[in-house]
Image (cartoon, rainbow, N blue to C red; front, top):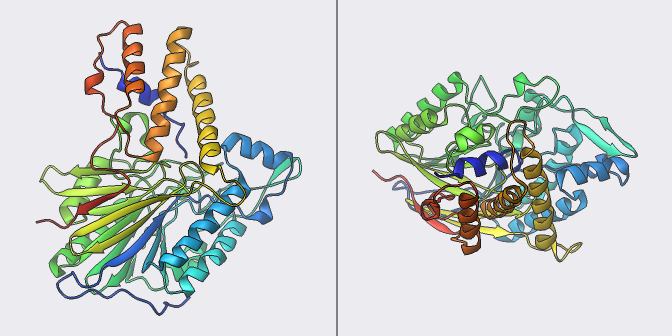
Length: 430
């Protein structure tokens, strides 16, 4: 009896959740040429300082979310400063730019990004489920939070026009998806997978690709294949599973019909897509029924441990990925330790809550063992490159024994290949 499904069930819901610049990238006709240097950040969840003032409302929000707003501002400033030194050709931001779609947060974030753009880095964004049409966007001042103005889909494209939309080669009429030219032989396909047209009282975490958008994207990929153009994909929601049974227990973190969509996109020639949403650092390889491969490179959030971002180089068919983690900031030299502890506390609290599900009685000693495993698994997964942890394997074996089952820990798999943090991928293979 294997209880991987049970671990995943219990931790579900725990992982949260102008003008062109002068510098451009020019690739040669053979697709090799100069290496394209770019970076990916995601799930910033930026909350404007104008909407967050010390008080009961902000304290309650930070306690519930496990975030320290002023620390997140420092993290973002530090990452942007590092990117200023790195001077990448491109900066990709794969959604959840704001805390909950506040107009002021969008406006202030854009101002923070502009210096990098002016220094020569082209910036491309795509919305996440926390960015557009949010009916309950809030400010946290005084004793109670208050509603504030959000933005519409049209305003998102207008606000971020200089970051992808104004100079797109093509725009999808059914969504906020677009195609951008990176170089003569390199395109960026930014896919809008959000359901903001369905929002009523709050946002919807789940994702999907509209049929019209899929047809639009597949036509672009077919054209790119005919012209020998490499296409890089970007989307907020996960395209493929990043752990066993994710479709069953974490459906809101994948696009609907993920397997069919991943197969269609891979068969049409998309080799890699950069995603976020799950707040975890993970890379997974998916192979379609026809034998075509696509990598889903998921990057962790800049709003919680482990505060990850990626520096990448693409040259020919080789994509090298270097992951960096923010471990300290001027205001907190022990950021990594304290933020990890906060995530551990949130995970433990959520696990205890889920163990109280009606009709799911658990003995106290079994409950404690389960919670310990859930905490370990979640902390390992969000950082990536989960290792064979002897203590965890012992906990799994103990749990199996408590459940009266024969231990099968040797077959326990929580991380799909390839490596998650520092790796070289080969894309565009025939």
